[in-house]
Length: 403
Ligand code: PMP
Image 1 (cartoon, rainbow, N blue to C red):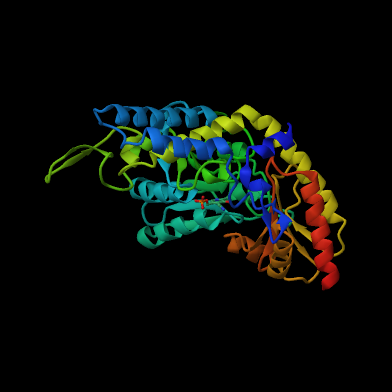
Image 2 (image 1 turned 120 degrees about the vertical axis):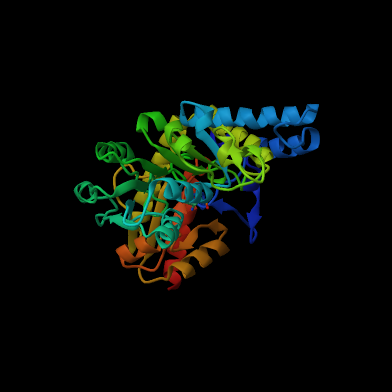
């Protein structure tokens, strides 16, 4: 991969902050956008914009074609069987809330259980807690080893005749652990239980094949995979989506409405009430085409090597503690240095132009498990370089000497 050339596609990477070149290492929070994605947005607003579906006029039909072509692009990108299985949402969070609401309604009663993991993002915990309040369900938690690995035997032991769903992150946004979701899904299926995979941190970094994984549901966000904010995806096997009731009511999701009785639209529209973010879906498809052209395998290999290099260099810093040390982890490194508070370290790195994230990373139960309040997190993209890793290391050394 020609990183110098790739970086030219991302105008923001050329800017300075506090008079220093920007070193953007907060890619797990959101990724920067290539020019083609921003162009797709402006071009569609300037030359196509019209509300989608059922419009007889030219622009509406063209906008509908772009929107539905985007659904096909997403289908291909994650290798779903059918576009009926691709529901557009606002992001991972909404995808999970949709499922908690619809699956909870159709498939769960008081005392039924779900299994989540210790390392889940709040967005894969709190929707289930809200369901617990409404329905009296039970949430069981897969424990984790100190290096950040979910314990397979403990996982297996959590299943019983009341287990209805497993909800697990493919890649941890804090530890970088790549969970063995394929095996975990096979285990769940052996117990007759479907699985939701939170793919927010996997889809941007590796080739994902929902059929090979045999995932029942798979959620991800557009903005973390170089697309726009405000658009995301819930993949669901057709047999499941068919069974589930709508999430929100409104236009688009109906077949016929009368005051006595309303019938619902076919898949996937049943789950897409209201005007969809059709500009966003087209821009997301543009982003997926962009990363596909780079090659997900090449992206994964490059980021893996960069993360390996960063880990090696960071480990050499005195007082360095890295959280999440499983082999073959994703491109996220969470750490603390000596007794420097994560917020102080992040703030001082910021003054050097280095953007990292600090805090609990929306994973407070995981922080509790690790016995810490928060970490500094550096997360990498294919547009990051060894020089940027060196700048991070030099920055940390500089802060360390101040303390
Ligand atoms: N799950 C994981 C693992 C995440 O990293 C994030 C974003 N930090 C989310 C869910 C939520 O994504 P969003 O805010 O885009 O809905």
